[in-house]
Image (cartoon, rainbow, N blue to C red; front, side, top):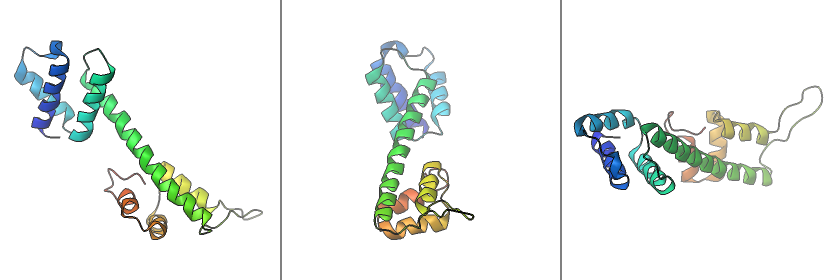
Length: 152
């Protein structure tokens, strides 16, 4: 997030919580700019609005970051659920290898892919298998985001 975006969030909070206003505007702006620099503005703005709607108390920067993290976690869960829905369709279509039992027992391909989605550890071959079945641009984007944002 840019310094201007961080200051916009600070101004929003000052509007909602008039006691929030700092006596030293420049230092306060700097603290906000530095503390929020690594976060995405649209999500942090949403976090600030959520905090305003749900609390009567002035938030700390840590409160905003906690709300931001909760929003990001919800988004990741929705994305994983979207991928698991395709995985379920693949299993219903009979495209996944079943588990084997006995001396050389193996997990089912469904179980392996499910674990990979949930834990975010799918390899390239597994991702390609899901994409080939799904033929869906959203699935491709979810699986091949940059390393920092990828859910798998």
